[in-house]
Length: 406
Image (cartoon, rainbow, N blue to C red):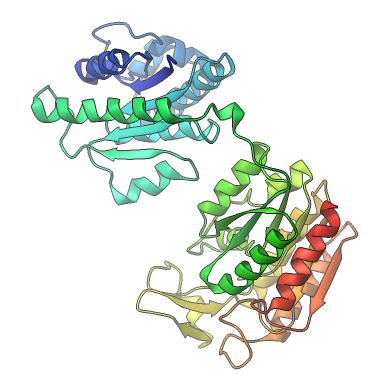
């Protein structure tokens, strides 16, 4: 079936290259809609969607933008306008895939546009140099592909043509094979779970017990990206319940840890009102290895567990645990559906079992008491006399969710 593919680029600087990309996509039988977000000079030809239209959607005049020296304001305006136009096309059934071609600024704007589109819409960014410092920002929690084109996209030669044709082939092939995103459904009942390497055994037990009860289980690695993506899917209507073994992306965000998932973490399930059961994995410990920028205060206590040359874990200071508990209480207070917390009394991960330098049930108790103090809604907090990785914890999590679901 003929698909509609939106191309994002700047005709004033990459007009020849964008024309080739558009022509190649159309030679595959698709309709290419060129969205021109030129912010500088006047384009050499008129695109399907002009810079004037994009600027207007952001409440700006294109000539004003071209005359401005404020690069941040210009970029933000064209990004906002591009997002609005993409969402408008999507609502009209005029967008089945999206691709960008250009430098780092275009990749940034395109990634922001793509982040507003649902899971399942094919998304490709073609960029000369996918610099490490930028890629994480582009990806965020979006299902997109970044194609590194190596050479600068200036002029036209066989190397550049070859790269552009591959970008065209990538987005064309993706839209040809992709399901209609509105038809993506999960079987009932579907449950999302979060996990980490430090909760691996608990996650295996939870998945086993849920499967035995007839649930379809979808695990997400809580490293700050996958758990954020899970929340986006929940907002889109996926999943009927969630077991948060590792809800730690929130406290990691607050204290600049290695696995931050944004301050909006946990909002999706709360807003939709689907049943939730939480465990407290890694709400008491955080990364303190060489990759952490503010590691000094976490290693100061001396309670540090070295894992390998890149990773070490330390306990959160008590004052930060209290602040964290207040943040999680706020999330619970906003939940529109049933929610429960299961608390193991003998450590909240495989790293803080009894005998570990990180084992400190008294400090764990401070977190729980602070959580209770800040709750404004009645919820059940079940304590189990075991470690998070023991079967008893998994059974309490699954039995609790099953009661809510049935």
